[in-house]
Length: 285
Ligand SMILES: O=C(O)CCC(=O)C(=O)O
Image (cartoon, rainbow, N blue to C red; front, top):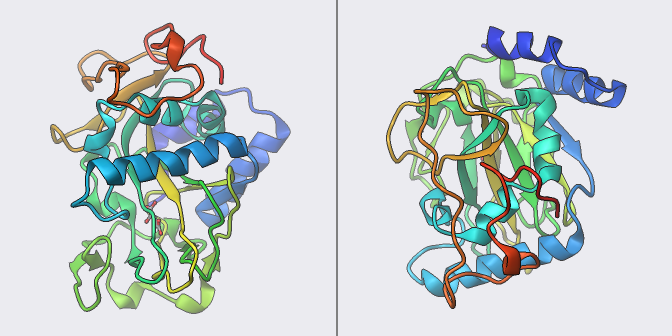
């Protein structure tokens, strides 16, 4: 299964620059792309502080399991996923009306950071249609040694498969795709520095190894949808309208989280929070 007809048509209707069109054709061919230096290093470091802050507030959670429900009332988390540089990066794939479906820090501590077994994202998601793309935002150095994401290019043309319970080793999703779909010899390491990102398709087969190095791996996954995609299970994500217009009757979006004294990670711009507009329109980093 490739992209739905809706997204293909929507791309045809957009005025894309030649570099954007190249990225879209690379994504269509390989199921992922890489963009370097999209956010500044200061913001990436603030993202690392955010992870430490979240872990202090939620001592029972592992750093691979900082899930989207925590984002609903968290102004810094919203600020990060609504960053116009990230929305500009996904707009060629999704069009101008963009919402957040879900977001999840997957950070791997040195020594025992857990693997993410081979899977297709769309198999887990209650979305109709399955028009969605993921930014994997690197907040530090993500390398083969500390368990960077790995992708099998071209597998975005594989239909979504049922994921199987898999707890042979401790792993982030406790499940994986059947081995018969995985040819690891074709896997590509997505090595990234702070502020770099990859964008991947919901059908592409991907995963990552554990972190056996002495360096943390800091990554944030951000699942963006066009506002025409319906989240069919209530409370399945952390829906926010981020850019453009909602479609009546499709999704209900949370309000922009407020900054409550002592209960958020301070960030540049929080003094004049919340930003203007329904999402973040008119706001620049
Ligand atoms: O963070 C990882 O290692 C894997 C990420 C992933 O599976 C995803 O973003 O869908």
